[in-house]
Image (cartoon, rainbow, N blue to C red):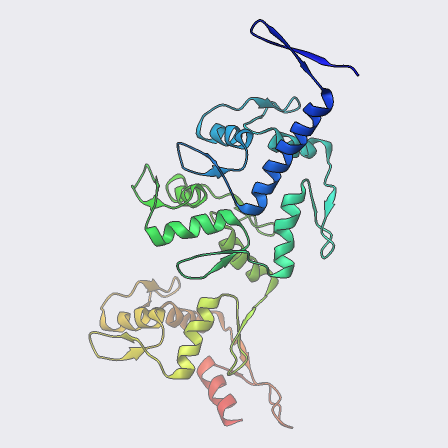
Length: 320
């Protein structure tokens, strides 16, 4: 049987290859068993995070340093982990071999698919020990936990406001930089935030997903529905400090306050007459234009086609 000769100082040691293979297998089994026991003996001296294997700790330590020894030969981007580089390379190769069976979305690595599948299953395996809230990703739980500790490690260099995550800080910075990366494909208006663009798009689509359960009226934004519902409940939290009249919306109160002021900012370009409310000016302009946008609709068997003011039109509806 062939033997391997290993040099150790000045002594020659004969080693049986089958014994080496057994030791390697035993070591591999030992590392594997730690995944079941949860044992993580290799601790990071910087953040305290534990690892099953020494090699995993070595890779982790690069996250605390600028060392990124793994280079993408296609785009030149560097990575601190070989596995991350391998996943990145699939972007250039166009390879997304891991497909979701529910929505057919594809991913470059299996881990991304596993995380994605939780959208369909509703699985949230990572739970907060403080409040019990569940998360589909461990990283999101980590961010959430900082909310309980009050930790906000990142600060804005412009105003000093502090944030939990880099993504939140980057979004906040758009206030100072004026950056508006989200563009409307219909009118090309730009927005700083994706949710603002989503709300804006409903102007073009006419979508009103927030529906009042009492009267069925739809709204493009949730805030509009909340304000509208207060009207049904009789809730009027906004109070005029001058006359005591109450309103369900802050905008209605602001409009009302102009009646207590002598200021009349809205002037007619034809005759120069001024008004404290823009709506009053709009009504006045119709005298000059002859516009009568409210026409009598067929109620029951009666149709007259007469044009009316908005107030007369609403009164006729109430009578009908």
